[in-house]
Length: 195
Image (cartoon, rainbow, N blue to C red; front, side):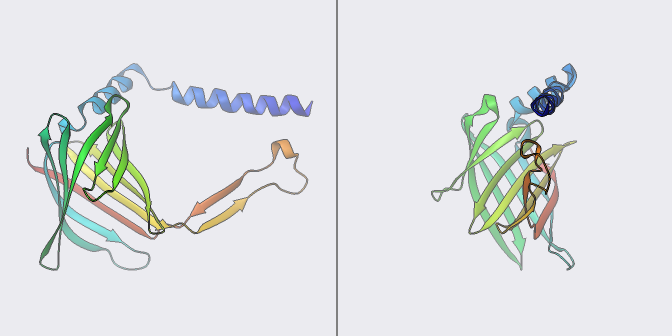
């Protein structure tokens, strides 16, 4: 009887995941395909805005920024981030390269031996990576002819919660969940100033 309950629970989760995965209607799917296939062509240009940097418990810091997405040839784009702080320009000249563009897989080449994987998911390009003990999620999202740029960052120190509870059936035990602190949030709404 307990095995049947476990099987039903597992079957329910599979059906739920499948229904979520297939709940996209035909129009949404066409939009997703269009967004994926037009990246980065529809994103080309120079985008400008103000970057807000948030730390816990302090007022946000604001600095002007620019994102340049310029085609170099049919297989690569310059992907340059420029920050203007303290009367100086901090230019980070990267390259965007296709890996499996039909699957939304791209790569940011920092031109110093670092290659960061990135994924196009509908109107969003994301990259998640760890550097020197900080886990970062960089997100670029196309929203009504603007790009929303966001970065979430925090340490790798883990906090565990949950786990099997006293008296639980081992087959139906509460899973252990690990969570990580976020201590920096950056965001900018970038408008195209040149196409």
